[in-house]
Amino acid sequence: QVQLVESGGGLVQAGGSLRLSCAVSGSIFTADTMAWYRQAPGKQRELVAGITSAGRTNYADSVKGRFTISRDNAENTVYLQMNSLKPEDTAVYYCNAAVRAADSRLINYWGQGTQVTVSS
Image 1: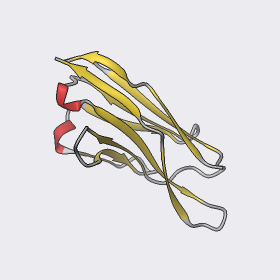
Image 2: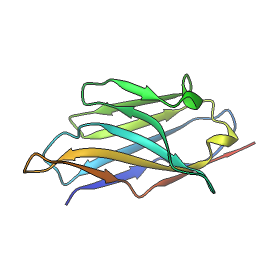
Image 3: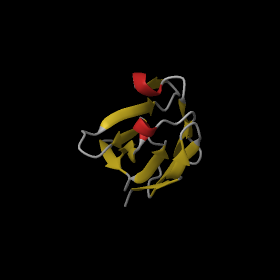
């Protein structure tokens, strides 16, 4: 079965950097669109950044210029490089990927979430 395995979260001081990784396992197909979402306590889950299989990216306004999403299609892995982190970036970060099934349907999968905490 398809699973998304995340890594890279942790505790960092404001102004610091972290890099998140998310690997798709259990599929022979390259993931279609991949993305990172985050959810802070008491808030709705929001899109942080997305990237298509062709490499086109989009970002939330709040992270533009600080975060960079990238992917390695050969490894079916997506990354999120987070620089100049702010306390308001504190949240659980979730990886999301649209993966094609054997019958060609696109199925949406979520990672288990990784905590990012930025101290002031």
